[in-house]
Each structure stands twice: as structure tokens, then as C-alpha cells.
Length: 247
Image (tube, rainbow, N blue to C red):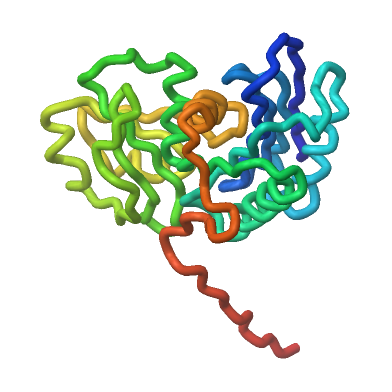
């Protein structure tokens, strides 16, 4: 089932016009922000849709009434990983293509930081210094891509691939509350058992949540090297050969 969401808001700004692209999971999404305020977005909740629909979503985004021409973009922000190898590769390739064509810089956004920003945006969790945010992206079996962040987005533990066991995060859970979220969190809920552990459902990385992260990097001239930037896959891609079947 295909679910596409779009909306538009008109505002008057002349700088900091950023196109955001997010393709690290099954959701394919794009958004426009001006001075850190999202003005339009397109989101497609359909697995394996990135290669066929990403450029179409971008075209629809710029057809939306009130959105400026593509030529007026100041930068493109893209989810840099970790996440789906294929999804990230497609997103970064399209982002680079637009940057090269328009002569504008590329902004790389950490996917796990993006997830944390999404939770903070929802305001479902009290913005307390005593709470640790733990985004999780599924990495097969009981392994997840994860990191730890404070309520101010300070990195408390760098991105890593972690096999979840009963004692995972136990030391930190003895001292502080940890909120787990992302498409890898649900499978860990029966393993991580603590009164200080809570789990949020439905949190996915979306381009519309890149606005503040991208604007901060844009203001600081914190751009990726357009020629050499590659997504942060975390683990090498392994291609498998299907087993032969005889009938």
C-alpha cells in the first residue's frame, strides 16, 4: 500500500533554501526548508521505492504552489547513514547530481542524529538532562546501528553496530532513563528490561526533520566534500548469490 503525504506553507525568506533527501530506510522522503522552517515535503511509505520514486517526489515538490524554482536552492542536505546500503547510495547519488548541476554545496546529516531530532520534535519525551536518547536502526537479527545522545543532541556514545543482549546498556540504565526508538528498537524491547527503559513506536527518519540540523550546518559552512563524500554504511555491503533451484 502506497502512502504519500504532501503539504506546503508560504513564507517570505531569501536565503538558506535547502532541499533535504532521506532514503536510509523503507521510507523515501524529501523536503524544502527556508531559514530552518519546513515549507513543503513529500513522503512515500513504500519499501523499495527509492530508485523509481525519489526523483519523482523531488519533481512534485518543486511543482507545489509557493515553492521557489530549483535554481534558487542554496544547498542540498542528505541523510548520510548508517542505514540501508542501497537506499543511502541512491539518496546520495541524487543529492550529488543536483549539487553538481546547480553549483551548490552538499550537507551530510547523521541518520541517528536525525532520528533523535525527530523524537525531540514530537515532544513526547520531557526534555530532561537526565534522559538519554538511543536511536536504533535494524541491522538484521539482534544487531542494530545505534548511538547515544543527550537532550541537547550531544553525542554520548558514537555510532556503532551493537548486538543487543540482556545486559546491553545496563550500566547506564542503572543511573538514567533511556528512550529507545527507530525501526530496530521494537525487537529489543523484550531483551532490554529495566524500569528506566522506555520505547517509542513509529519514529522513522524523515527529510522534514532535517531542517534545523541542515540549517545549523549551512550557517556554519559545514559542507561535505562533493567529489569524495560517501555514505556512512558502517558495515561493508555483502552481495549474496541465490541458491540454484531445480524443478
